[in-house]
Length: 140
Image 1 (cartoon, rainbow, N blue to C red):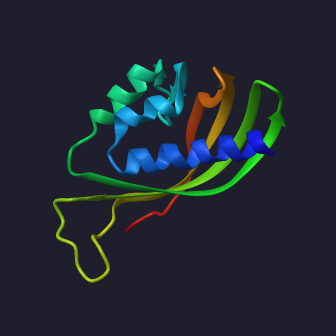
Image 2 (cartoon, helix red, strand yellow):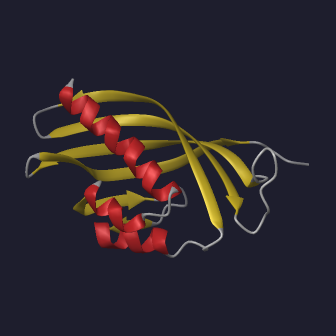
């Protein structure tokens, strides 16, 4: 259970760091040789490439990853796998906040993370993440 808890905390922490714009801190979440496969199929190799990709996002972009049930399908001493459901909302700091916050922009997307975790130097890290989109709200 300790490994599962630590890995689940990484999933939440990664989302919190991305949503908070603290991309450099992702180095404490992903292994140095991590792979991230984006929903469009692009593969980022290494933690530095992952951090650089997030840092290159438009400065006005707001994202909120709502993390749901992580289902662990395998936990071993130095390796774990899990699938996590994600709801992604986006917005822009260019929009003035109102009584209900800022308006969302783009699609509200249901997606998932298929993660492989590795235990390195006494700590769990995400070694591979395959992110995918599954559903979106069609807007007229």
